[in-house]
Image 1 (tube, helix red, strand yellow):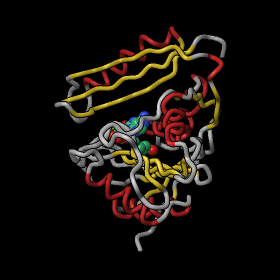
Image 2 (cartoon, protein in one colour):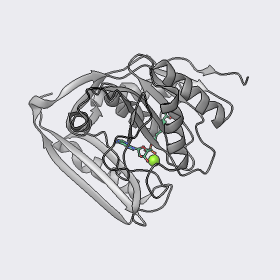
Image 3 (tube, protein in one colour):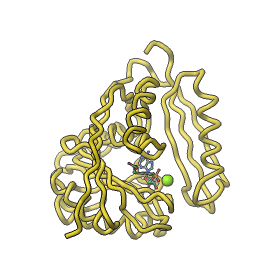
Length: 267
Ligand code: WAQ
Ligand code: MG
């Protein structure tokens, strides 16, 4: 890629609270249409129309750009959101997260992880051993940013997700975000479910386990969602991790394998 890249970031608020955010890495000639799409997304959000929108465009120094493949996607089907959360816990344990940390993270997301009981703007950072929260600002959290798919990788991904019945913006964005998060220095795994009242899916992602999509992670109509990045706290430079998540430009240039659906029996 020889052209100059730009980071385009949007965030929107409603009633003083975070409503929507998005981030892309784009050539100059792609900026206009992507910016318009972001504005429309904020104005047409399932939780209401944005009252405040901020768009930021910043040039990325080319020499900083790194490339990476996407993780494998596993399509887990459960019968209830409770079963979904149990399955998520088992994936987190497999990834090396302690049980207490799983329980804490699920409880924070369930109750609204921001101090006012709503969703946070970014992610919690959770000590994978103790469950302690480590993000400096519990309302803002930490936002993973400056990541995207190469245009041809995006096309290829849409095509392959289409075959699996999963071609939607939530999946594409979440897979791209998770690809960056699970490579961050000191991150063990990620847990996420959506804050959109009508989008009930979520996932656990880790370097070894890949992107474990779970179709049900919360009850219909629930507005609270969010993300937890589980981290190995010993000798970790928290500032360096946050800086990497926010600033290191990372472009995904290859698909992982998209696995066939797996249905989990109710015990
Ligand atoms: N960095 C950190 N945290 C973020 C970011 C980011 N860039 N973007 C969103 N969050 C946090 C924030 O707290 C949101 O409230 C929360 O995540 C949920 O964001 O396979 O739609 O955009 O079908 O609602 C996952 C399943 C969907 C996708 C996730 O997230 C699939 C989703 P949303
Ligand atoms: Mg959302």
